[in-house]
Image (cartoon, rainbow, N blue to C red; front, side):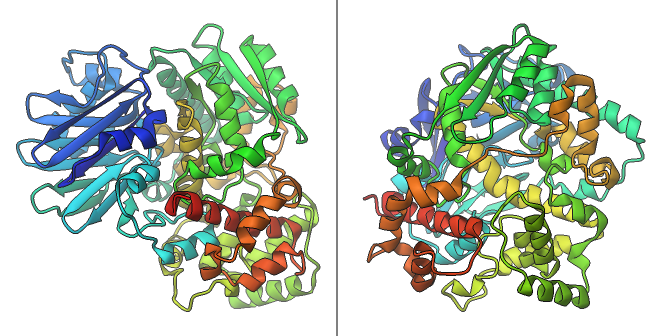
Length: 613
């Protein structure tokens, strides 16, 4: 895993690129200029350490800079009888592109963003993996194009301006929708998308080369037993590939959940003395005892990382600034500390990312497996809204009452409001506090409506939206930045090519069984994991957000949001913010903490990154 940057009609300042992204590639930094194209690569050496230097050239025609890993590069080399000079997956990728062009993308199992310059056609080809695990941001304005793995790099190189409409979206969504960023003329390359740039005219053509929707439309005829066998086989293949595609030791993040537990169990059968890492945070529920059960069963080299938030006040601005944009997801904080601690043990680590979105791991999926709320009629919505209006706000996030209240909340909504109520639920019920008369939600509304009105089931609709929005806009961004900030590579077997193309085809009842989420994976887990772990509900990082907002970070949040020149005052009604700070408004305590955290994250970005103060 590495960092890349490039430009057309713009001279990259390599020192500035290094200053902003050296953590992505501390082992080597090299660039080259070809015609009006400038390509730069920062390397984290993991595979073919001696022979994988970039930019890499082929036959005086093609030059590549590549961030990521192609896990099936060896089998592709044999399949197409390629004759590389090195053991690098980068060279295999170049040879495949020479032979197949853009069609080579469908062959790849990996996480990747790469740019290939064709010296003959004077075109630049840029592509991103299916799920969008590896990032790329593209600036295009007037007579220049500049791209980089991180927004902070573009901010270092260019005089970027704020795109206010996208910040309205952030306030509602908690992240930036699809290709949007907080800056004008800057987009992110979409998941499963490639771009062809004419380096003479600077015209860019975008093409979606992979879309999960087409697989949701397919229907597997496999029985439940057949699906168990096939899913287990696919996961085993994915884990093996991700172990073998490294010249360094590969470890596993091991929580108390079934996703990382399955990955660990399978990995331990294909490597000697697997290194596993579990984290325990002071003052929160600890999954360490459950993780220890798995470690003991498979005799792994286990380390329990005990992490405190003692330095959170000193670290919080630095952590948030890593993202280069406002970032709402508060689990970015423990993710940062976990990655920092893990880097002391390994450089490559496997995780369970993507399993919840592919196999229905969230509790909110249960009602959608029984009823398609996207197709609800007006009577149901009005009834649900009336019931919710007379009920008191819940204050216990994990209570049955809170679950029932939220069920009524999204049953009373439609389109984007339904999806947001069922998901992040930040500003729902307070949308009127956003200071704009423009229909800033149109892009989100149209995208959600297209899925909501499709022929998929209610569960499939919600799961696809989570894959396209929650996973892409939030979770993968979080994991990329948290790991790469410490030069740590995270690999996700559940996001393997074959798994992405099989799991969506499976029937709903294989994923949600009565009240049980992730039913198929839990069934597989019975073969590998201790029973107490299989029965555990989905937890994720237990982030004490209310405590942070009310105690540890209360003063710094107050200072940012009460400043006379606070940026959020142009986005959100400042009277509403002050009421929240004084706790002078009837609102669920969890939602109050979410809104204040969302605004605080935006203020830190504006002051520290945009204004550079």
